Image (cartoon, rainbow, N blue to C red):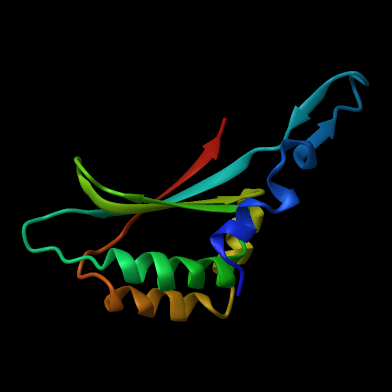
Length: 127
């Protein structure tokens, strides 16, 4: 199982892996759009959240199942969320393929092991 540190040191995270030459303009270089998936856990008076389990077990399970380019965890101090995770993917297609992993069901079932909060997902294009 890959750790978050291994994912961050992966050579795939460097932008030159996303360089695309524009055949219409031989000197023009553009980047393909990367996708950031943020899963947030809104706080409430009755919410419970085990940050240690989330960091040590659940997020590494996500990394193993979906192989994102990077994964970063936020622990809410002040604001609307108890916690969030930001997963980065090379493209929308790679994110969609990751969601089709046979391990996705186990990741979703694991949510009950650390929280009673219904997660909220946002999919964004990094610009």
